[in-house]
Each structure stands twice: as C-alpha cells, then as structure tokens.
Image (cartoon, rainbow, N blue to C red; front, side, top):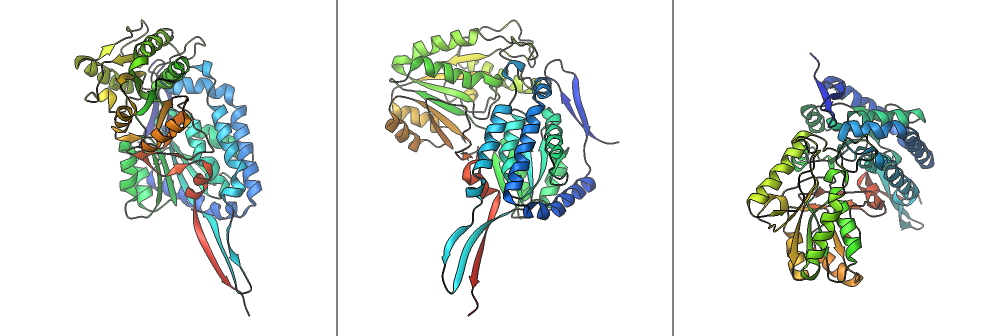
Length: 459
C-alpha cells in the first residue's frame, strides 16, 4: 500500500491535502532526469534564465487570490495579511538584479603569456527542503538564485504545506522553465536521507528544526555534498534608555506575535533597561489584549491558530513551566483558546534563563521580558543561547548599536527594526541556528563553486 503525506488543517482538524510518497526508485529516477536536464539549462544565456525565473515569479503572483486561503487552511495564517507574494517577489527580484555581479568571472589578470580567471559554475542538482511557516518566501530564497545560477532544483516542502511546491512548479513550468529543471517531490525522511547519502545532489539547502539539520548532516557525512542549514532561533530584543519606546514596543511585540509567533527570526525574548521596563510591559500588554484570535479565513482575525496542535502544546508546556517557576503571566486566556491549535498569546515577566521559555525555541505567541541594568548585562543575556540568527537593538546611537552588535553572537544585527529579511544582506546564523548563507551576492557564491582557469598562450 502506498504511503501518503497528510496535511491536517489547523482550522478544524480536517485532512486538507494528501499526497503519495515517492518510493526510492522513483525518486532516484526523478533526480537523474534533473541531472540530465541541468547542463542544457546552464548553457542558456544568463539573461534568459533570469527572465524565465522572474516570469515564473509573476505567475505565482497571478495565483495569489487562490494561494492566500490555501495558506490559511494549511498553516493558519490569517487571510487579512495577504500571503507572502510581496517578500517572495522582492527577494527574487533582488537576486535577479545582482545576478551579473554575483556570477561574474573574476579576472585575475592576463598578459602575453597567460590568461587567468575564476568562474562560478553550478553545483548541478540542488535539493531545497522548505519549511511550512513561510513556505513561499523561504523556498524562493534558494530556488531563484539556484535556477539563475544554472542549477536544476528538486523542491521538497513540509507536510504541513503540501500544496506550495505544486503551485510553484506549476507557475514556473507555465512560463517555459523545463519540467525536469524544477521538480516538486513528496518524500519521507528516510528516502530524503537515502538520496543525500547516495550523492544525488551537488548542494542541499534545508530550513527547519535543529533535529532535521542534524539528520541532513548525518546523511551527507562523507559525501562532500555542500550544505546550507537555517535551523531557527531564540532571537532577542534589547531596549536601551534612549530608545523610541512606542516604536520599540509596537515593533518588538509584532515581531514576537505575528504569524502566531511562528517565525524563525521572530522575537522570543526581550531585555529592557530598568528605567523603561514598567512602561514597556504596560504598553505591550495593551497591544496583545487587542488581538483577535480566531478562524484565519475571517478578515477580522489578527491571530490565527498555530499550524499544528503539537506545536501549541509545546508553547503551553513552556509557559506553564515558567509560571510554576515564578514567572508572571500578563494575558488572560482568550475565550477562543480551545486547548488545541487556537492558543492565547502570552507575555511573561519575572522570567530567568533557568526557564525553558527563555532558552528553548518556543516558535509560538509567547515572549519573556526581563529587566537589565546596562549594555554588558544585556549582551551577556543575548549571548546566553544555543541559537544565533538575529538580534534587535533599540537606541538612537548608531555607534553604540554597532559596538554592541559586534559583541553579539548572531547572524544579523538589527537597529530599530526586527523580523525582516533584507535580500541585499546575507541571511545567515551561527551556533545551533546552522551554517552557510542565503541571498545577497554570498548566496550566489554558496550555490556555485569556483573553477579556476590558468591558460598559457601558445608562443
């Protein structure tokens, strides 16, 4: 009997989508087709590849009216926010714009005797394993530059967002990108690991859990396959005494609660200078109490269900453990909280780093807020984490922010903003957040390999 993947909708617990899993033989054949098609794709002019990718992006945009409710059904994001096409297009467009520079030959110099250059050449077949929380935007981070670089792409999405890969390949194929060059797959973990272990791919990009990243690394051990891993975060915010308090509260609380807190770069812990602490908490509680928890298909809903009941239960566990250890909860349980995927947001004070809610990734609508005395204490606390994706600093002093940023173990330092991916900057992390980097010119470097030419001219 063929095994299947099932997307259970967080809206009502129903089976929203179901797809059969590819067996290893069929999956291997699919990868071979990709490898066979890749060289002719790479031989096309760069501008032709760029134009086709951007046409595919536009074709996804044309589907947005259908995509937005599909995302609500699959992972619970309220329809009022309009889906992901804005960021999806922004990232692809930037990578298209810099493709010439990102993939340009490096001219080392030539004279009467020698021509010496370094070229960027594609890896071959790239496997993109995308997560459910921002399934379009996280996928395009790699899909667009990988295709533009001349790679073939095999795309695998999380079970929670089964329909996203189908949508993307349908759109990209409709504008003329060959079917074998971009393929969507439904695989279980074992088949994915077996393909990686068999050296099926030149590069693997994975966005997901630390456990998933470890499994990718273990599967690739000894194969010398290139790997990019973005494995989440426990991102901090630090509010200094000269901060614009209203802007800090509005932005950091939105960064903590948007998408029901299901953002890898969402704010999960906030440190506030002593003099602003009480006012910050008061304003934060007022904001959160205005949220409307409910069905994401309702345009009035501002906070949808978490993507799966088990994710909500982990947040409840971290929150209840913290309260039992002395934390203060500031938000009463919402009437719409059903004990399942529909979860009340929460703000906690009197928290410490002995509590899991301040150390483990919560990935839900809960944030702990701590009082700090100075930059040194805040920096120590921000670094007291197994993760390092982003950090958000709130001050009017740019030099101070940069100095503190230099001391923080993180991939990105924000000043007076948070929870945003700038495609001109490398998206990267350290510690358990992973390795490698996407987007920016560095994204092209990671999706290609250098190839040196030392050409001696005939005398």
